[in-house]
Length: 282
Length: 356
Image (cartoon, rainbow over all chains, first blue to last red; front, side, top):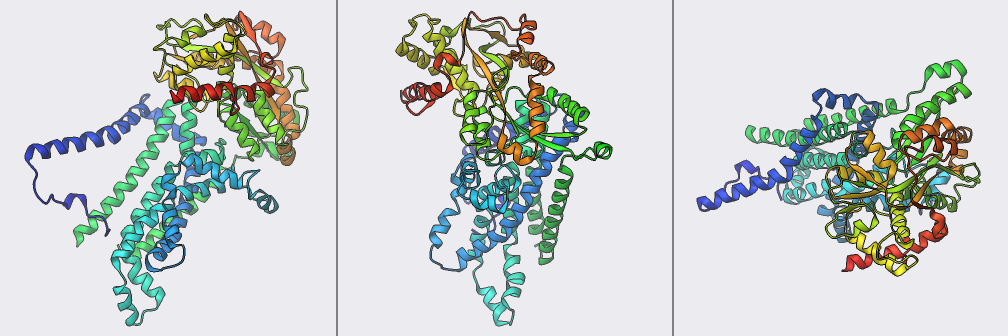
């Protein structure tokens, strides 16, 4: 897969009959409308039920600010780690042959298949007080479960595939000819990577980061189990939404949820916008 | 996008990281500088691990305790609270969530923490035998009771949709099941002869065939009911009373026979000692058992464990025709395996229903 073809410029090869085409458009609009636009509209309606002022007041609550701060503190290191290691893993998977490569390739998709709540319990079995690593952690006096490190680990687990699955196909399609050419012209390995490979990967990079960040912001089950939802300490924005619903603070819950959703949406749309602009320049 | 813009992007990421870290440092509980200046005492942190339904009561009680402790010991106490289903909370504490004080739905969940060696003291050694509040199992029904739900027997009627939480995570769910089975076994369900265990089990199956939603905790269950799901929610009396205080307009039905819910409260010795918060934890427990706190619990729908407060609030909390306790089943040590173990009456009944 090369960088995604822009949807707007893709033209149908042969024009289907007019009524069929109209029916298909209607199905697409209905499908996306029911599954995405309608819930978003409902959320907007819920958040603004008591007016804009009440919705905005949510974000003056120190507990809400802490929750969003924690979400950022978890998501950003996760993005950095995935950007670095994701690139390395994708590189190895495409360019190298090593024993166990196929196994690794399969394992990378595991986070897509495992329920996040199960991920939380897996980490508890490892890092909990009765977990396998408990003696080590106790000796080093490190708190992983019910603390931020455990939540970062959980988020790393669920976001693992995105970067790799974006980069690997691009690396494959890009091939090695340009790198070889650079080498024959006297560039060393680092220069080649920095000047030739990385620029070729840039859109995979951007999409990978966007998806990783969006997924990290939205994680719920795994961080609830491993973090315990302690208000003011291990409560992320999504966990705050869950708690506010339990406390019947519906406007706060919907406003916080809307902010999270809007941020992810902006992220995705912003990426798409940048890409369009670059395509036009060409 | 060029190499330069990639560099710029990385810079942006690093910057936002730094920003996040700053957010982190401001996110620490703000120390009460005036208190520190006045007494030289550092503010203490007390961690409360609780079940989901008494959160409004704690929201009112904690500020009062903070003020009392400030006056008494000249120290500010910052609370960290977590509210999960009772079973889930108990397992989290066992797995290393270091709560100094735990308030759970049922004694069995405290026993689990005790068996893990984290509660070492005699937590039941107080006038209320370790309990902090009582309640009963009731039904929440739609305004005006359109389905005519009067007693347990009505829950088994065809076409009645019921919400009750999942006993794997929720303590309230366990109380609900024991209330239902006990009422049937004690002869308060037509067609189930008193003492007939097989008939009581069949009745339990009939009711659970009508259960449409099993949520993680009692609070989630009742808020889903409020969103229009189902005809009846089997729940704590205090859940319905708190919801009515918050403007919800559904009705409460008290069955003729129901179980007395007794909610335990304990200091988690291992964690309190580790944090050096034992004195505050003990003081918090004593405060919650005081007359002042018990009156506040009563205002939040909970029946008091203090006999004088219970007497004063009797008009709010009518007596039940046939009220039994967990002792009817020989205590939690016997009730837990008998009903919720792998071979337990409820576990097997649920499997039967699901395989049909």
